[in-house]
Amino acid sequence: MTKTGVIVLAHGSRGERGKVDVETALTRIAAGLRLLLTPRVEIIGAALQFNQPTLEEASAFLAQKSVDRVVIAPYFLFAGRHITNDIPELIRNLQSDYPDTEFILADNLGLDESFTSLMAQKIKRSVPDLAGITSPDTTSHIEQESMEIIGTLLPPLPGLSNEELTIVKRLVHTSGDPQMAPLIKFSPSAISDGLRAITVGTTIFTDVRMVQAGIDKRRSEAFCCSVVCALNGPDSMANNGGRTRTAAAIRGLGTKLDGAVVAVGNAPTALFALLELMEHEGVKPALVVGMPVGFVQAKESKAELMKRKAPYITIEGTRGGSPLAAATINALLRLAESGDSSRSKLYIKSNLSGGV
Figure 1: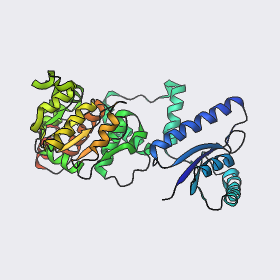
Figure 2 (figure 1 turned 135 degrees about the horizontal axis):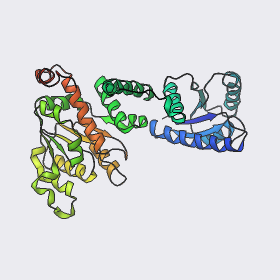
Figure 3 (figure 1 turned 30 degrees about the vertical axis):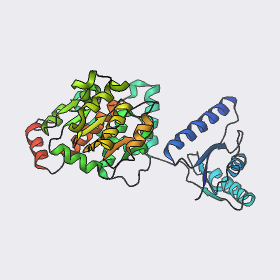
Figure 4 (figure 1 turned 45 degrees about the vertical axis):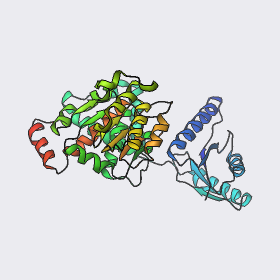
């Protein structure tokens, strides 16, 4: 298997403040890339001049890591002399020094459309009165503009369906974090199974009341989907065998979760309890939205969920939370109302005639 290294190459700065900024920027960019690229990639920042490590030093570091190829990613806006002459010449020298390593020069940053939005944000932050004034009746336009901006900020997400991409955008909109997008994972039938369950009026169970409160009541009621918090059940006050309240509450629901949509947005223990029901008691939810948050068991519980055959939508790692779990359900409800089912058409006719 090919082992790859990535060098994020900045120009460098002669000034003392610039040296600090270059080092800080390269460290943060490398950390961000580690979340967006495969974990097998070795990533290091380097400077063309004035700062360390240099391109040569970074290449030597990657050689010690036994990489087979090195991608040099220039942190440059324009294809000036450094891009067209200096860096290619350095790469030729490196190829001579490391004949068994493949060196690849990636495109410079260029005129990406997302820079326009970024520049506007920085201008408005410096001079707030330059921000456009939006009237109260333009809510839908604000949302549409937000989705368009999010589309320019998302990294490449190959293989996602339009419906999956819609949910990704909704979660990025809720979190304000475009870097989270590649961490959002769908089982192959998650969307279709989730929409099917909603359109037949399946109950939606949540682990905590915050997720329940965040789910669009008008849309869920239009599809006859009851939204039930596990903590409202009789077993929620028990602490069975040292279980947390949410875990005990999920366990207490038992076979009621069979065929239901289950949204876990807070407690990893609740997700583990659901997985136990699935494994030992044959409970088969129609869809699991598994998004517990935190640094204790959250990552592990979601990793276990992704090993199961049940349909799921989840977020790898420590990210998650009640707002994201609720936003996922709301995105599914929106997709359902825009579908071709008779129940969707009835919803649109009876409840949305006055506008959303």
